[in-house]
Image 1 (cartoon, one colour):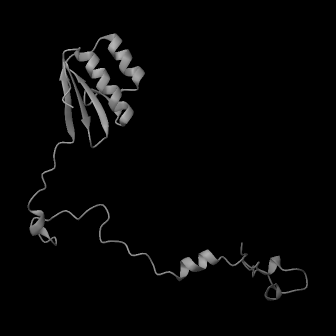
Image 2: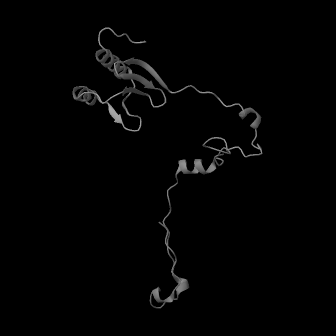
Length: 155
């Protein structure tokens, strides 16, 4: 840590003036990584990071002709199975398996969903669980049980 030189005469030792006081600054160790980082040119940032700038009313954004046609992406939610008052689906955007019920399920079914690790999402009115191979098998089995033996799944 460097020190400031004190030029006031009141802090000088007796019999010496302030200009004669010398302060020794410690030498810092050489850091090769810091020197290499300083030698590199500064990083170039793109003109925009979070996506292209919004188009103005005049359409002066470069490539505006190409952007006129909107991309038609499919719905991220895909229903897999519909049964007696419920629907099993998968939301690809959030990577979740989803159970939606027409009416509030029975207490034993709610307990089973909670035990399996499902979370109730009030905004979607659905029970969700992260989608992975194990939960996909689990939700398929639960849907078969809820629908009964006569129902078949679309997969």
